[in-house]
Length: 88
Image (cartoon, rainbow, N blue to C red):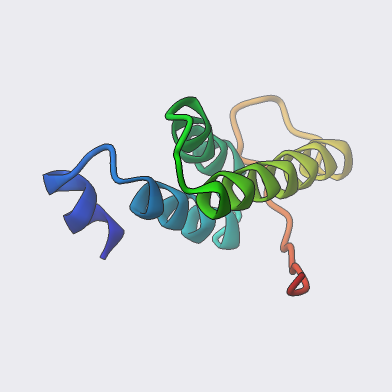
């Protein structure tokens, strides 16, 4: 699992991006963005990982905005929207 890898190698960009993508798929958009930001802050030499993290962050940000727009809450509840992405 990503958690096991990150316990040993907390700066492993592929695992950070993978964890973020898993959170994105679970509808935990704000948490996902945190992981994508970590990857992007690393300035990874792997352009694929950087591009993937950027694309995933955009998807999570869009989904979070849609969730906030369509789910009126008092701020104590988590907004969630099911998001599917097509392969690029």
